[in-house]
Amino acid sequence: MVRVTGHAYPWDVIGDAAFPSRVRDTGVESVTLAAVYHATRAATPLHPGHQIVDARGTALYRPVRDTVWAGRRLRPVAPEWMDAPDPYRQAAVALRAAGLRVDAWVVLTHDSRLGRARPDLAVVNCFGEPYPYALCPTHEEVRDYAATLAAEAVRDAPVDGVSLEACGQLGVTHAGPHEKTDGAWTAEAARWLSVCCCAGCQAAWSARGLDPGGVLTALRAAVRAQAHGTPGHTLRAEIAAALLAARHETTDLLRAQVIAGVRTVTPAAALTLHAQPDPWATGPSPGLTPAAAKEVDRLLVPAWPTESPSAAAISAAAATGVPVDAYVTVLPPARPDDLPAHVDRLLAAGASGIALYHLGLAPSGGQATLAALATRAHEGQPA
Image 1 (cartoon, rainbow, N blue to C red):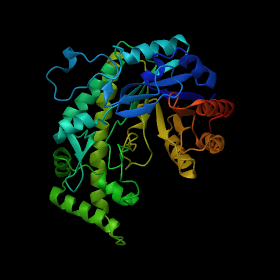
Image 2 (image 1 turned 120 degrees about the vertical axis):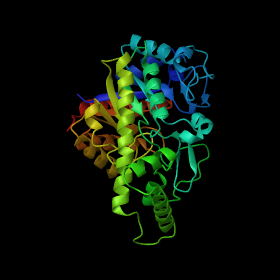
Image 3 (image 1 turned 90 degrees about the vertical axis):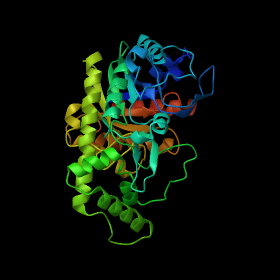
């Protein structure tokens, strides 16, 4: 049987007594519920008490304990836009009472508030321009923060599994407020603009025998060549390989610390890792390192575009031998008529689960699409 999960926020559940039964009616059996989440302005079209939630920054939807965070430069904040003292727990209890499994959704290195407050720990591109929404995991302080954050997110709470998002480095692409960068760079230019060049990363390059000044010059030249359409000019293969190896080493360290933190408080919870098979990928679903797949129970791979590259990504991830959930959205620009065949292709490509986005954002028509896709997945068979 194909596993079908759906994503939700605590505010979708709290104050809406009908939410758990509405989820059950779709055929979704497991809810991935945000316990740590970045800033968002979220629609709640079916909620009886509100239509929009303005989550103004990254928050820990659990109590923020001074005994844990005192004295740290990096510490989370509670969601001041919610009245509940422990929003994740309250929502999780309601969902579990309805017979639904609950996984804690934990976003790790995506935090604009902390990136602006601690610019020395943020990702920086080769032109010296910071990405304040992205904490760089090369820094031990960031890794310690992420591991503690993950542990606090699931401490003494109803948790069947833990879903780790942004467990790696974010890059140049960011769906921020009034973003005006779409289509500005080629895929290759975006790759080089996503190489973090902060002081910590430059130290890691030096340890691998690279000259940081030379690397910065080469990265800038590669980006500018792409912008001006200069053919045949790119980063030398040996430099690119060393940069990727350094990033993967850091990603492995981050993931190991986060998993250890989670295991200290919930040793039996299944671990899902948001990831992409492209080793250069950055963002909420960072590129898989050679060691990543065997350290978790499942991979969650983005498959929002309904074209064939999504199926290819699922196939590549499934080749690791770890169960793969295909991450599918029912929201625009996805067209409802395209989604059934899309789910069929993803299952044929090797997906053993379908993760649906999003249980709270979807209006009544979207709820019908969620139900149709859940039925389609349950009737299908993983490859």
